[in-house]
Every structure is written in structure tokens, then in C-alpha cells.
Image (cartoon, rainbow, N blue to C red; front, side, top):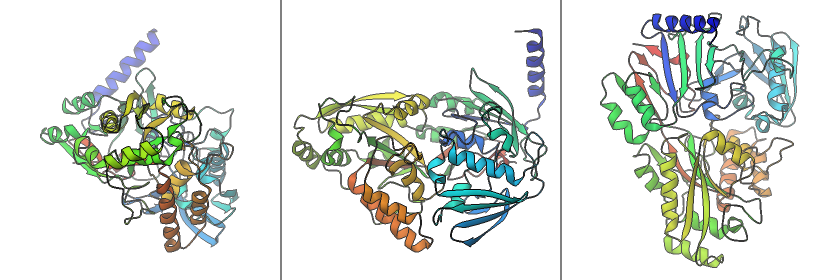
Length: 511
């Protein structure tokens, strides 16, 4: 290391050591954020971390009710127009003042950039205009009842940072949030944020945040109990009782919106990681056999230790569009074996299950439980646990036959799940960007699209439930469980976890 590097390291250590207790909140996540560029990644760790750096036009409270953020107010002159008035005095971390030009550039980038993780949700937007520096007008191609929900996820950044020739947000993020990036360690993936003194809102109680990824569940728990970190996300269910007895540590629990499921390759006649010559998952009876064999109640009991609930459909109970009258079929091994026999697999077959490795509580244990369950119908499963980034890259390449995934419904609306996970994939338009299995049903598309253009909440709810029932009849995936959000937190900090899994440190207080 150079002399300058030694000096900077010494100054950093001296600064860290000089911090008063409670000045810094050290947070351990199960996985690192995939990107600090808020438009390029919509996965949960990125969203949790980036919510401290960036603000959005509208936000949500702990109950997911919409509230003003960078937009002070909004009106709908008609079903195709949304007019927003911006707050005054909001500044970005580089000192520049927010204007409508920044909003226009941010929304256009999130809608149009081929790399954007939000293209699918913003496709109905026809135009974004800035009639004055403090006013934004959004025009849509058709009625878009969920527009404000999607705007609550789209970060606003300086217009200059949306240009391809500008400094990349992934390494030099600039937002208007209560914290700004202070340093990052690419070798460990740790991130240090500091309180943004130019923030227009109340000053957060915590001055400094350190995020670090600790994928190992035992290591993450040990980091909390030993005092090396102050908060851990994704507390492994088996450790909840242990942490509850540690002096100075509290276990915080919130009903979540994250659903875990297994899904199938429905794109190809020949799938690479299953033994039959023809892709067995193209046969509905095979998918039904899996659904009749994998018991979500066992996974909730043995993997989540009761900190969750069995999933019955494509969304968690807290999501708008959930149908409480839709029940999962009974577990019936004899019926499952008959279905495989009818499908032409009297002796079963072999398949690889790609699963996350430490990204979500109990993910590897759940994968092996699924393998053991399917062995009862002579389906021989090889579990292939992968770090989250590797798993996502593999799925993006279409390089999987059978995979386990988890989806956190940030909007709390079933339309989001349709747009990202169920809609017939169209890479050019950004539709179905996370529909890795390639599920496609024109009737399901039609019903959900109608729901997406229905302004009446009651009629829209009925349409969403209809779409859920149609899709569930196809078994594009087998719902497993909805897990609780469980965090461990040391004194002197206090916090109420959110169902959407955002970790907004500005909401943390000190006792």
C-alpha cells in the first residue's frame, strides 16, 4: 500500500474508533446488493440498501399506504394523465437541486434502458413531460391504476447521471436520500454510508451505516451475538430462540410479502438437466404430480420453524389480488404416482434443482427437503445450491430445468407478479423479465392486462383473482411458503420492520 493509502486507512480507522456508541449501525445481510444503480436491479437486497441512498416521487409507510416523497401532491385530470407537483428544496448528494428535468430523465431511463429491471412495469407510460421546473406530467397509453405503486419504486437521480457517458451510478451513486455513499470495499462487498447533511427531512438518529454480506447463517448469527454487527437480516429460523435469550438483542418479526416457490422450464422440447429425452415439465400432469408431493406445511414446520405460512397461490395473503377462497390441492402421493404413470414416467426420472445458497432463510434446507419429498414418487433430485448472483445469471441464460426462487412483492399488488413472473416473455419490450421458465398462456395475459387497465378497485380485484385462478390451473410453479421478515437488533437501536423488506435506517431510533 502507498504512503497515501496507509494514511487514509489510518484516518478511517481513527474516525471509526472515535464514533460514539449508537453513531454507527452495522448491518449484515444474507447477500450483497447486486447493484447500487437503482434502475438496473429490482432484487430485494439492492432495494433494501438503495432505499437509504435514493428517494422516489411517492413512498409507502410501514403499512404500504402511499404517501408523498419527492412529489408533494398529485392529481388525475383524466384516466390517462397524472400531474405531480414536486417538493421545494430537495437536493442531491452532489449539491444540485431537484427539478422536473431530473424526474423526466430518471423515469425515461427506468422505462427505456434495456438493462432496466423496471421496464415491464413502466411500459404503459407514453410520455413524461416537465411543463415547469416543479411540475411533472405523466401520460399513459391506457388507464394505469397501479402507476403510483410503480413510481414508489423508481429512484430519482440527477439528469446528468442518466446519460451513458456519465459516471456510473453503480460505483458512484447520487441520490437525494438521507444517506450518501462514503466508501466501499470491493474485496468484501461492504458498503459504508454517512448521513447526508443536506437532506431536506429530519436528520436520522444514526450517523453512519455499514452494510456487509455474510451469507453463512451461523456466521451471521455469531456476528450479532458477539457484537461485531448491530443488525442482521434474514435470521435463520433455527436461531430465533437462541437470539431471543441473548442480553441486549431483540428479535423483530413482521409478516412478509416474500413467497418462495419452485418453477419449471416450460420453453424447450428438450431441457438440459432432466433425464427424459422430452422435457417432462411440458406435461401438466408432471407439474401436478410435483404439486401433490411437495408439502408446504412440512417446509414451514421443519425449515421455517413456524415463522411463515404455507403458500396456496401465486402471491402472499397481504398482496392485493390474493384469493382467500383458493386452496392448494391435498398432498396425495398415490395420485402423484398415477399422474406420472399417465404422463409416461412409471419409473420417474432424474432432474437437477437449482437453488439459492444462503440468500434467504433456510433456502438450502428447503431445497433438500423438496428433493427428499420427490424421491417418494421416484423423482431423483440433485440439489445445486448457488450464490444468488450465480443463480440469477444462470436463470437469465435459461440454463435451468427446475429451480427454486423467492419473490418479494414490493408493490403489494398481484399485477407486479404478473408483469415480471407470469406474462409471456418479450425481451424487446421488457415483459416477463423474470419469467425464467417461459410460462405463456394468452388467456392469463388477457385477463391480467384487463385488470391492469381497470380503474375500479372492486372490478380490478375480481379480475386479478380470475387471473390467479387461471394461472394456478396451469401450475407454472409450485408455491411453497410465505416467510416472515425476521431481524436481530442490538441495543441501543429500535426499529419496526417493514413488510416490503426495505431497511430504511432513517426509521431507526436510539433508546
